[in-house]
Structures are given as structure tokens and as C-alpha cells.
Image (tube, rainbow, N blue to C red; front, side, top):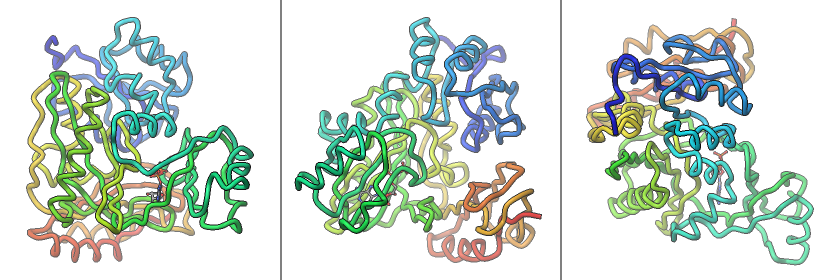
Length: 384
Ligand code: ADP
């Protein structure tokens, strides 16, 4: 591949949320121009990209026009107009990860079929075209309780997922094409981010443990995981098997469950930088954002070795506060050694909105956990 890092090179990033912003910041260390497509003029990445392009990533024409402005396209969100990406690819535009892989991953039903075809361990599932066809399957005994229902398209942060334990909970069923999955008796939810470049070189970040809040969003992330080495090795192997099966160039975040019998199952994947990799900015030698750039620019991948153990806390809008954002406790937290605060620059907060994150480094995980619990108490996202 030709040398891509030159001051004339235009990297296009679809969507400019916090992941786009952190990707732009990593790219700004190199000699490339960054173009960001987003509907929101004040999106997080708009403050630091070279050129902001207003447009909707779901609109065919907007994506085509954006493609014409840049040399290479990547994305920080799965929900992108695939037809436009496929058209651009057919005309020779470089797009990484490949739109055909994104088309499979966008649809949780196709994702599950891919796991089955490639012998990737994932909970047993059935597909249903509608809520009424699922109700028929429940009535005939084809589906039994408990189970998890997931909408095939468009879900995020637990929206589009319901756990149904008995017939009294059927009013929670979601409408639309969905998949029904076996309920896993979860011991821990973990994640592995893996990168692959054009030459097929692959590297995994260390396994992290995720803790969720009541709104089903990652609240705390622990790196490295204290799980048994056998389990972390298995999770790492599964992640590399998936990225190799897709022959995907870029990053793949693999979310997994460890069940109460220590069996590892894939929950879902995302072909982009991921919330479960925020800590890599400070806690590993290469960040997930730099690693994505290395992969798509076809450089050797960077070391993913842990520099210091870390706990990452998502800074979510406090429930009960809505409006112009105000951060409480910043000065106190800045005074704690190893506390690295990231504010995304969103102007308006609302309950549980992802407004920033904090990575807390420690000489040991215990030390990082202690400091993180202080940060959790002190640092609050409220409104004026
Ligand atoms: P999203 O795409 O919205 O993040 P997920 O598929 O990750 O949705 O599901 C959200 C949460 O629901 C998971 O983090 C997990 O806690 C729970 N969950 C999902 N699938 C299962 C399952 N098969 N068994 C048990 N819990 C599940």
C-alpha cells in the first residue's frame, strides 16, 4: 500500500461523538487531515478535526458526498448507510473496516449466523420476523422461559434488549425483527479489543472487566482483568478468531460473557473504537485510537502492554438534571494522583448521557479502585 501519512492525506471519520473526537486527537499526532461527518455542528469531534462536514451518516447522498471529499473512510458508529459505503467501495474508495463486514455486524441476526458458521461460541438463538411470530413460538412451546430478546437492528447501550423471565413479562416484548437468545447465567462481562492490519498482523488489548449501571451502560471498567489466565486466553483467542474470520482491517471490540461455570460466550461485537477501550489512552503503550490508525494505514501494530493498572469510570449525566452542563468536583479530582479526566465537550446534559470519562491509574489495581471510588463520589455531571 502507498504511504498514506502525508499532509495532503484526508482521513474521513463518519460521526463525531466522543470516539470520533479521541480518534481525531490520535490522528493529530501524525501528518494527516481529519474530516468528520455529523449532523450536529457542536458534536465532540467538531472542536478538533481539520474540517467538519454537516450531514447525516444514514442518508445515502450525504455519505456519498462525504466520500468524495476524503481519501480513506473509517467510522466510529455502526449505524451508517451501508449502500452508500458499498457504492463508494465499488468506485475504488478505501473504506476500513470493510462495509461488507459492517453489513453483517449491523444486523445482530446476521452476526449470530456468522458465529454459527465460523464455530464461534455464542448463546444458542432463533430468529423471528415479528413480535407476533415470537408469541406464536412461545405458545407452541418452541421458545421457553427465561430468554433474552434482541432487536436485530439499531440497538445500543441495552436499548433493544429485554430479558423475559416468565409469561407475566410478555408486555415487555419488543416489536420488529428480533432474535431470541438463551439467557446466560453471567459471572462477569468482559471485553477484548483486537486489531488487524492489511497484512493480517493481529494484536489484542488486555481483557477488561465491565460493570454496568441500572440503565445498562458500562459504568466501570477494570484493566487488567483478574480472571483466571485460562479464561482470558480463551477470550483473546475468540477475539482473534473472529477478526481473522472476517479478514477485517481495523479494530474489533468483542464483548463476552463468562458464565458461572467459567465458560466464555460472545455477546456482541463492534468494528470500531469502543467504550471498553477508553483506558488505553493512558494505561497501555498504544491507545485503541492509535491502533486503529496503524491498522488502516497499514503500519505495524503497536504494543498493547499495560503500563499501569487502571479503572475507567464513565461520567454520566446525573439523573434529575437536564440542561446546560456543569461539572462538580473537578478541582478535587484533578488533585488525586493518576486521575485523568476527559470531558467530551457536550453542551447539554441529561440523565445517563455519556458526558466524559475518567481513567484512574494506580501502582496496583487495589490502589486504582480506591481512588476511583473517591472520584465516583466527588465528580458529578449536573446542570445550571
Ligand atoms: P447492546 O447492543 O444494547 O449493548 P447487548 O446485546 O450487549 O446490547 O445486551 C445488553 C445487556 O443485556 C448485556 O450487557 C447483558 O447484561 C444483558 N444480556 C444480553 N444478552 C444476554 C444473554 N444472552 N444472557 C444474559 N444476559 C444478556
